[in-house]
Length: 404
Image 1 (cartoon, rainbow, N blue to C red):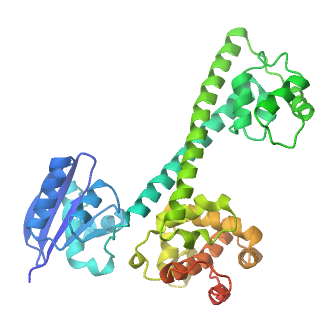
Image 2 (image 1 turned 90 degrees about the vertical axis):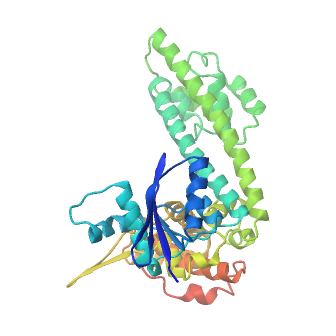
Image 3 (image 1 turned 60 degrees about the vertical axis):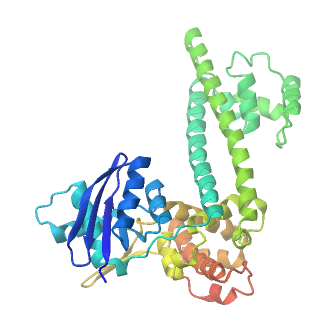
């Protein structure tokens, strides 16, 4: 029986397609547009040619989802793997979209046993991934805007940046909206500030007198009248943008908390934490790992994808372990957050971390060592569908946590 393989070099506007038989005979070569008609044409073409395997350089997106929905077996290859394979088929070093599609088809034909086909996650997991990734991006935007606001205050009104711990906290934004410049706060006294704090339900431990002292002790910027008004306008613009962003993040966080609690695997990942504040981290780990158990055949495969184990480089007498850069960076960040939280209160996690530091590892390295140990536990409970239990998973914790 003839096996047919295809390679697709994806792009934002059109995709190059190459279809080969198992003997290397070219069946089709061309391009399709990245629109509804083009994607429908592509799926019909591949299904009509009875394509068994499709290789592409990305693991997600509309194109990949349409291919999987059409019943095709899709392999996601890392761009570095395709780059290294080009020299097998062309010595001149040239590159083109059609040639890359040919290389992908050849890899699907000859090396498919070295890769794992993509498995689509369930709808609950895909929805959770959309929410958590959107929240990550919005948090990055909030940090950027807060840094911009902090820099503006340091230049034009240092006292306003020092009165509260975070310039993007609700109380700080309310204060800056009411007093966007030093001129607006000229008549601000202890009683007026106390009334302001009461209206906005300030729950900090600082009294109005202490906060006012911070405001007055800060250096005073010498600004001209026009410059001061321009700075006031900028502060109000940044505060307005941050207020909307902070509120949307609050609502999105609530949505994520609800989604992870009703997810079939939600209880597994929530059991890793002792408080509700870590719900978002549990959701992020779940969303990135997914719900298809076959995706990670071993705990080592999961640790590698999370960037928690090193890359060995051996040549003659030289043997070194280097930092793993090719990984799921969102999963790596979520696992690192889990490790950084549990090293403070979890006795076993604290022990793994402190032993790593005692061996001379710096903080990021020790976090990766702990991350690899945690992922061994997470993989086991994920495969067995059993929530985390220190007694049940104690034997896994007792295993030596290899350096990461």
